[in-house]
Image 1 (tube, one colour):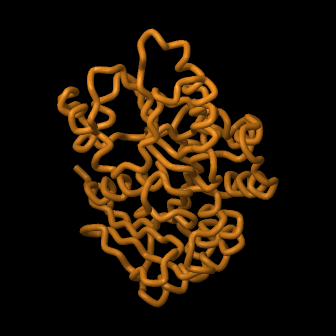
Image 2: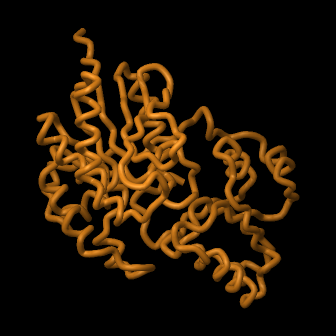
Length: 317
């Protein structure tokens, strides 16, 4: 039997650090996905370096993530959380800094795996300079978000760049068949260029445990519990769940909302007003951010977990 070749992979996550707290700003399922993907790649015998933009002046340049995996911070632009569109303007500089860093440290890679369209722009430069295969996962598509019409419109710049990236990369990874169809419909990407790889689940962390014990940990009784986990923003459709609560008054359910406002602040306040107007304030609990390791208790305590997003290409929850 021929053993598979061990690859050295460069992952690009320019606008969001995989080590960020899920549920804050732009940090969500993508960051969790990259962390888990990195670990599984290492388990398969590969080496992974994740390149991201430095956000904190005191952060070490290199953060070990275990054997054969590292996070490498590139100092590009202001070392702080800034708007994604501003980060886009730094994409060429990010690619240059990454290429120079790799040259200085004699690093060579067998493949580039970009995440989100901003990383894809940097990846196109490295694809040309390094002459290695470039794979991308978009996670969300601007054209679909605009078509839905919920929240602020994505700029035409993003739509154009996503189309450019889709045409020039070697392979696109989609998490669902629907996303594959959307890439073909909105960006005319040949279907043979798209591979559908559903998101996996870490079964060591997310596994079934005793429901009563999980409820005790969270201070819950025997009431019916509905669970939402994710950033609090309009696109997630939490308003639809709150609007449904009066129709379930006979069950007297409790809705637990785990997460905080995304980049657009004030959405949680809007939802609280909605709950008040519908007379269901006592049925809705805003839990705020929950440590990732404690999330399994919430899933086990709930009777049902809802994913009411108007658009959700990822669906890792």
